[in-house]
Image (cartoon, rainbow, N blue to C red; front, side, top):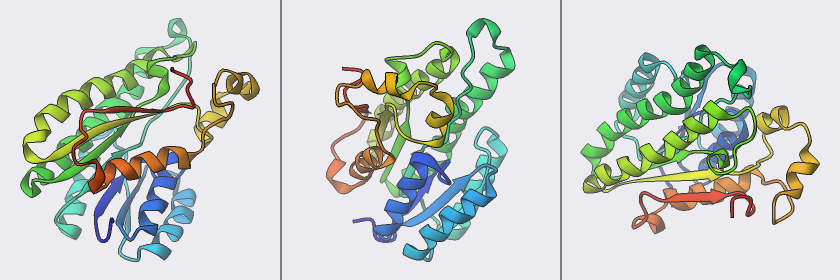
Length: 245
């Protein structure tokens, strides 16, 4: 299904992004693995990707920096000449009571979760418009429905992802570019393991009675990236075990 498709997954050295990148590589896609600064984890993940997809590459870039995003997409253009699928997975969370937070906290969060995502969409759209084809999947968070104490600006940034994506979907449709949002709930990743202090009590809130896995999210991303989702755009799809129902 994804033979030789050029797929960029931001923040794909660990967590959900890692699983997405590996699963695409197993399906013979050409994966562009992006990471920010964890070179050891990136090396380990890329070895797995490369074993399934020898033409895949890794690109280090901080997506909160527009110049690094431009350089990353210039590298993609020179190497492959196109981009078929963009999965905007990179994101940060820094839980803190709003009254104790600073403008720097807000800006850091928004620069990655919103501006960085928009920068990647902008660069990818330029190529997808020429191709008259493309799939963009933006990752939000269940915090837009069920935010926790300390997640004010994080929740705001993830809500912005949904609003932006729905508007972009309308603009992009004329060029046959699909834009959809995946909203993960409580998923077992490094980020959740570090931020959730009482996992058992959180699981009790989930109707399906378990924490999600990266594979739960990946399966939906694979569907939204494939031909079978060609008539789906502007959608917001929740993977949370019923938490936000």
